[in-house]
Amino acid sequence: MLRHAEIAVAIFYVIGFFKGDARLESSPLDLTVSVAVLMILAIVMRLAFTETELRLPRVLLWYVPILFLMFMSLSYTPSLAAGLDKTLRFVFLTLVGAISPFILVNSRIKLERFLATLVIGAILMSINSFFMLKGEDRLVAPSGETTALGFCAGLALIVIWTLWFPKLPLVRRILFYPLIGVLAVALVGSGGRLANVATAVCLGLSILFCRRLAVDFGIMLGCGIAALPFVNIPAASIQYLASLTRPHDAFGTRTDLMRFGLQTFLDHPIFGVGIQGYRYVTPNPLTYNFPHNLLLELGAELGVFAVFAFLIFAVCSFGELFNLLREHNPRYLVLERTVLSLLVLGALDVSVSGEMNNDRLFFFLLSLPFVLREFISRDTLPASFHPETDALAGTGEAVVAPG
Image (tube, helix red, strand yellow):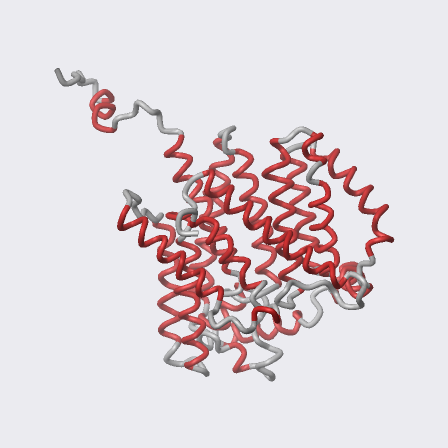
């Protein structure tokens, strides 16, 4: 994982969904922290012993106000220990993950290997959940989370459908249908409402990008409908998904969490109640742990400036990706569209689920458009380009080769 550190980066984002398994409880190490240490070591080794340079885009400076507000809010947060823990996890886990692609996933083959590792992790997670198919409860990841299983299965489906399928003929695409079936069963069996809706939206985008995928969609839909009576998906999963037809029930208990997050933000709009302070000003810290919306979480705990800083960064990220798509580079177009679909999936996910340190993959995805810009510009540079001589040529001066 040090030599191919992009694999470590991918494992970093899925290991948390496995480490909650009872079979891993005896592990003396926190697996997420262990992989993060490997990533930091790989970064240090590349900067110290190779010609790799750490060149970060200026847009990342929008993280500075958020960090400043985090540390400042430690002076008034209701729980200093909890606030410090969340702040340090953001710095050493979430931000390290957001910066890592600029060094560890900074080429096309590394990014594709990273995505392939995520797909493998999702498939293993999905197969593990099949032991619950004949039960009454929704399918879950090894950690016990239904949302994690749905999100990972949806992400893997999007990668296969958007990145791999456009490059393959129909005969070879059919070979992947069993894997898609495994992921689809896990996605529906998780009962994740947002995950199912977001995946459907992203698969629809992929069909707009590549019209011939409509054939695959028709085949898979027909096979899925035919196989549904034999799969034994738990009734609880179907009931959860059925709530999508009742908008007032679609968010369930999260409606109250978001409403309280909004009220907390309106009551403390400038600096919030302090990092990790949301749960300690709620009626019940165990149930009201976070607002399940990233912007409401930032607003309630850190105030309006943190919300603006993050929104500006997110808008710049999407803007950079749209600029790349408009340039229409045929060699990278499929990869750019895949990143767009994953960003849409991540943006929808953080709007109704999770907490900023649990949603660290979204921060990684926000960095990808700038990473794409960097290695696309590098790879499309003419092989004969020499900055000094070409600059002189542009001025009209004579360029004379030595000798």
